[in-house]
Image: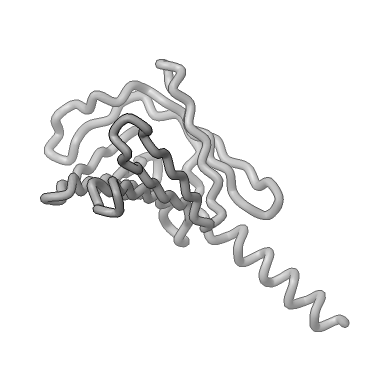
Length: 147
């Protein structure tokens, strides 16, 4: 019984430590080539709820986002009755020790039409946002550095 308790405590401790500390307020963002970003100032807060990290992104445009880093895929499917086409999405949010990672994939009638992967990491007071976007033909990568 004692070994089960110790194992449980280690498992919970490890999962809690697996996400980076991204909390802070970021006033300006720029692209990697020093060009100013379109991103407005925003803040990130994070808290543990039911053993998973929740990350809340709040900005001045009231476009708040909440990510739950539980590593579980979420699936949605919508069929358009007029065109008889089906749009399917899958998304997942998880952490490595140094990054919060969000992934979204979209398929139209089973064919991949888009994928977006965003990773957030922080060193000192700088938040780095790397976004990879695949539009069905080619992939583009964008970096933003926020302070």
